Image 1 (cartoon, rainbow, N blue to C red):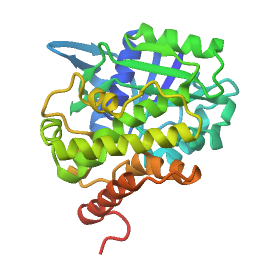
Image 2 (cartoon, rainbow, N blue to C red):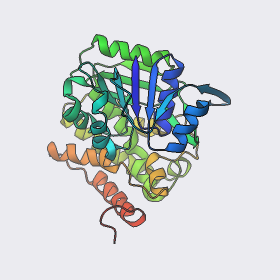
Image 3 (cartoon, rainbow, N blue to C red):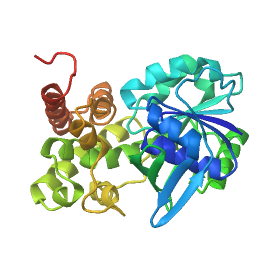
Length: 313
């Protein structure tokens, strides 16, 4: 299976390395030229615990020339999704499947506008990655689930085939007939710590040490659960504390959320696709979301203060 991953960050590189190791024909595209050149020169090094594996991956800084792909995986920052899928038109054939493994909600609609809804799968992953240096990433693959499914809930041959390829690469992949529920389950995990760590600048060790922060997180998760249920989404999570505890499961106290990492780099965050998604879906269902609204507003203010975000004085 020919797979093109758009987004050569930590997670995109981790997924690319795993799939290539499993025998897939993998193309990785990204803007970091030093990373791309290192991969092409010496391979991609995956560091898992104390074990290092070097994998041959075809890396490019441009999409042109790759040709039609069987599967396109989008792993750019959420606010770059539109540009990413627009740039991927040359990869799309009549049978190409497109899916996002990004955090948050709303990507599938963006992808469908370009690729067509029939060619889009829903997906979420708990696999993690940390970029170490050009050509080298720390990969969190073992025991981390990836769930994929058709947006209409049907179990098709193409989704089974893709799951088989992902599993061959060591990605623990399941097919879901309730992919919307799966995506909301993951959103609850992101809601648990995303904005709070960005606002306080705390790692998980600090976040989970202060009862007031826990209470705020549980309130934000509870709001999101109410919104999901108002839209008829079936969640596997029945209590906000489940998402709160799942968010830190298996992670060290020094772990930093991607939202915090973005602010530390002076970059825009994915707040619009996480807490912002709760606001949009809440408004559509006439469900109040004051806690998520407050958290989102605070992060927006911090973005304005520490990045080149449009509107900064």
